[in-house]
Amino acid sequence: MQSASLNEARDKQDKQDKQDKQDKNRQQFDVVVVGAGFSGMYLLHKLRGLGFSVAVIEAGDDVGGTWYWNRYPGARCDVPSMEYSFSFDDDLQQDWDWTEVMAGQPEILKYANHIADRYDLRRDVRFNTRVNSAHFDADEQHWQVTTDQGDVYQSRFCVMATGCLSVPNTPTIDGHDDFAGPIYHTGNWPHEGVDFSTVRVGIIGTGSSGIQAIPVIAEQAQHLTVFQRTPNYTMPAHNRPLSDEFLNKAKANYEQIRADQRASMTGIVSYGFGFGGADYFEPTESLLETTAEQRAALVEKKGFGALQQFADISLDPTANELACEMYRDQLARLIDDPQTADALMPKGYPIGCKRPVIDTNYYATFNRDNVTLVDLRRGGIEKITATGVQTAQGHYEFDALVYATGFDAMTGALERIDIRGRNGETLRDVWAAGPRTYLGLQVHGFPNMFTVTGPGSPSVLSNMLVSIEQHVDWISDCIDHMRAHQLQVIEAAAAAEEAWVAHVNQVAENTMFTAPSCNSWYLGANIPGKPRIFMPYVGGVGTYRDKCDEVAAAGYAGFELSAAGT
Ligand code: FAD
Ligand code: NAP
Image (spheres, protein in one colour):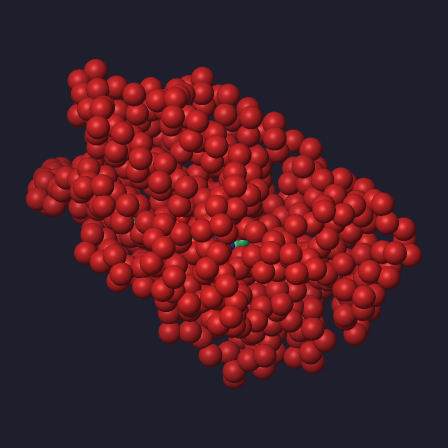
């Protein structure tokens, strides 16, 4: 009895100590931003410039987000870097020189660090701090944000810049803990790098991360065993250094390039890479109008490049199937061993259903003597053992294991925070059947909280830097508008959210993304139990931007705005 009351007293004291610590650490800001990737960094710069007090909270020990965490061998951008970069400051884009068409992770991280230095961002970022909860206090009309460091932040606005691909997914496989060697995940790679030169490596996963890492690890390791569940369609990157001449020409045209990116479908115009010397890359031809002989001749002449000029591949299922056949024909030419070629062939789902993958030397890697491909369609993984992976086809031994198994995308980072809205309801519960937003910017019931590149916006279907800039500008303008009009609360109206969700679903219907044979992380299909909902908005970056601008110009139509005390 006595020890029970002692325990109670101790618990009470612990709670009081925690409360005292929180009270002592309570800090007030106009805006709290969670995450210091490109989204959080630009938010800080922009809001600070408008005179708001801002605190950014970041789990990592420095800026860069994706490019801070994903340091695996071969990590690289798959959008031309002249376009995957900020446009908000012309001096910045004129000063910065990208060295390759598609920059590698170290160069992109260097760019992120340059931005942090250039705009003196770090002084307002709390690093090594994870946000555990964010609760809206309906009486005070502010957000209360708590962290794993015991801090409490109060702010009128809370912006989640937590990233769409920031929560690595490690599948639950029996025996994981039995493995005797080191285990890595591409999405959380050791900063000091990993030397595989004296070991045998096993890698699970052949999405973008796996396809980038496999050729580089194969060159280094004694042996590499690739565990492939679903073969992907992947196109050669043709990456190369950028000449001074190209850099100068692109910089001289930056104003037009940026305007065209913003108005485009994906935020990518591939300046300098058009057909026949055209400035922009734009497929216009119809594959359906070609004959079998013409298609064979095209593959013979251009390899995978044969598919690039046809616009109907992404629109028409029959054209898509023809393209898949051309793809497999080209693949067969590249692989020495016919059984390996067959194992690498994607079948039964369309090109374009999953995120396009771009590679350097991926298929050639499977002609190497030190690489084994395990086609899990012939017998899946049963368990991980101390020395490797047991599959239905046999046991494969190695010394180090790499998971290239992706992310709990789009909703993962948000649902890992205990976010509670006006009535105490959690975002997790509100999104139990799938994410619902108005414009991917706000959720009804969660006033004054914004999401950058949230579900329901073009987000991961676009060049993310273009979408991040557009969201940050829109959110900052909105907060500035509220201050100018003495408004305190903005909340997406239920009806506007309902209509937007219906529109997002409707435009995704009958696309390659939602084909019944398609399984992708866009649909949440990579995470067991996640609702199958197509999360991003397919309508296009330009159309979406116009819609957001119209909403703002109409006094934030579809949002309810109220002044202090109302
Ligand atoms: P992130 O960069 O993900 O940053 C979010 C930050 O929030 C992270 O640093 C994280 O630590 C922090 N955070 C999350 N939750 C919390 C919390 N609770 N508390 C504190 N901090 C938190 N996009 C393209 O357009 N082109 C590409 O070529 C491209 N390549 C990619 C390659 C890889 C390997 C990956 C994983 C993604 C790639 N992307 C690409 C998408 C990429 O995520 C975006 O381009 C962009 O970097 C996202 O920036 P962000 O700031 O929105 O999010
Ligand atoms: P991903 O596309 O989700 O791929 C994960 C891979 O792991 C898939 O091959 C998947 O197979 C496999 N996998 C998952 N669980 C498995 C299991 N239990 N057993 C066997 N295999 C399993 O993840 P990602 O490659 O990290 O890429 C995610 C996204 O990040 C990309 O789509 C892209 O947006 C971005 N990214 C971009 C680049 C770039 O080039 N710039 C590079 C990396 C990442 P199934 O397909 O069968 O599920």
